[in-house]
Length: 121
Image (cartoon, rainbow, N blue to C red; front, side, top):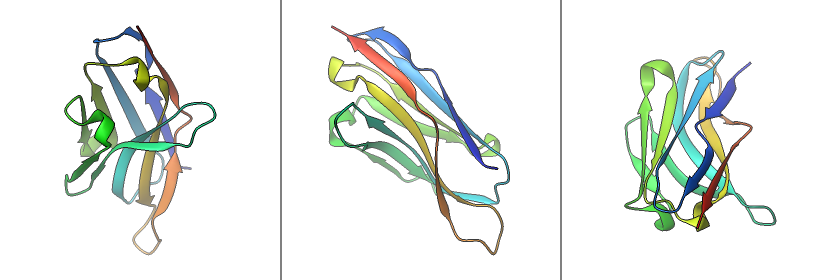
């Protein structure tokens, strides 16, 4: 089955940088979108950034100019480079993918288990 595995989370001081990665594995025919969401306890899960198969990117206003999303299509991997981190960025970051497993199947949403990012002041 399709699996998304995140890595790269951890503890960093404000102003520092962190790079998250997410590798999709399993039966994958094509990927429409990959991206990152984040969630703080008691709040909804919000979009951080996503990138389409054509390379189009979208960012939340709160991270524009600080975060950069990229991908390695050959490895079904997406990255999130996070610079100038702020305490407000502290959250669990979840990898997301919208993909199909074969030519005749529709696209489905898949989620990773999440990785903790903590930014201290």
